[in-house]
Image (tube, rainbow, N blue to C red; front, side, top):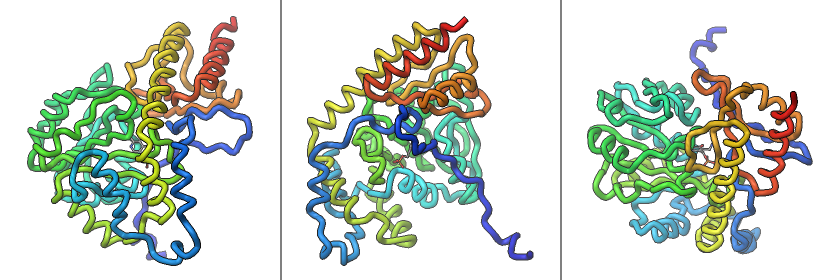
Length: 352
Ligand code: PMP
């Protein structure tokens, strides 16, 4: 059994459950409750057997160009991948390559430590303050890179542009990755900083606000040199990660700006009334700028509420981890789903 010691053993990331139940309310993985833009299916109809015979465009040219136009940057500043998880995994491999530890908040996207462990990158977690906020001074120490989501996940807390700029400008010797998976639900993007800071990489996804989690599209925007390094690593790994249907549908999905805006506005409006209802039921939560709310109840333990809701066919996310084991992360669904969720909670909490 000598081979055992040469195996790269890892503790994998555990994604939220994808239950196969027919009737359920799924508020556990921050998916969009509405379908993608009606035009996206045109992308699929453009496909035929002949086009699938060939390898897809390794440069993902049409989608890269579309995103560059959309954001008003050069196409050399855009890198497209198979979901932002793919983009982030490649970014860890490409940019976090020093012998100093990388830094990220103690409460954050739970894939970061998994990638760090997979690639054997040392890391230090920086505690958020008691309001789940970051402090720029905590990131003014030796490091081999910095990563955090804004708004943060699972808290939903958005940090100000000034704090992000302070972190980026005081760490010009390392790369700072801002994961903007949830930026479209009312946050302010730090994309405007990329021209001033060559060490800033912004990562986005089509999974949440564009309702395309099933398709797997994510992208990064940054300085041309950063994007070039990212491409070199991708092409040293797998040239054809993004399949042709995903490329076609992705292009179709950025065309319909009206639908996109309407969809995210609806989610934000639902989020705001759900906040009011949760407060009424005795929950507290940091003010969320994501498509989810991270809430704790003043009297009833989160684990108990999680189990009750699951029994009702209502799935939310719960982590048994230090500092957050009394919180539930509740994805914002449709008004109807959220009404049913609030009613179920109200019934349970009002029992003597
Ligand atoms: N970043 C954050 C903060 C997330 O919560 C998620 C969703 N799990 C992702 C990235 C990855 O999303 P995707 O791979 O679907 O783009």
